Amino acid sequence: MNEILNDIERWRAQGEQVAIATVIKTVGSAPCQIGAKMAVSSAGGLAGSVSGGCVEGSVFEECQDALRTGRARLVRYGVADEEAWEVGLACGGTIEIFVEVLSW
Image 1 (cartoon, one colour):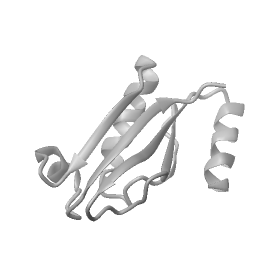
Image 2 (cartoon, helix red, strand yellow):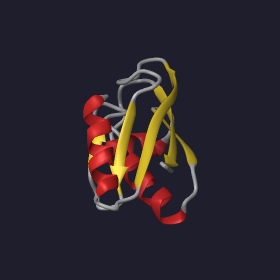
Image 3 (cartoon, rainbow, N blue to C red):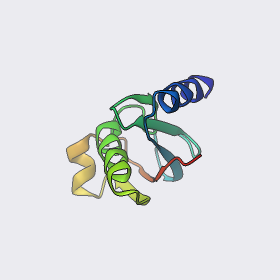
Image 4 (tube, rainbow, N blue to C red):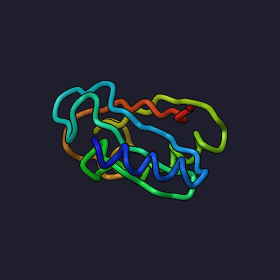
């Protein structure tokens, strides 16, 4: 977690905006536990993980969109969802991730 905080502090010092993605619910097999976080900067920096890599690309895009719009969102990935297979979530579980813009 300290590494994520260091990256966030560096990005903010550089004048970048930051979005935070947090795992808020898991059902069945999930690569990361509730509370796992990923930070994304407006310049494209990434720190942390919410899925062990399997849906990180999609979550990165959700973070970038949140930074553009200023709107938080809840995203869900599960094996029953067609999108989950497309982005790589094949672990057999479901994860819900809350994406928000970090404000200071």
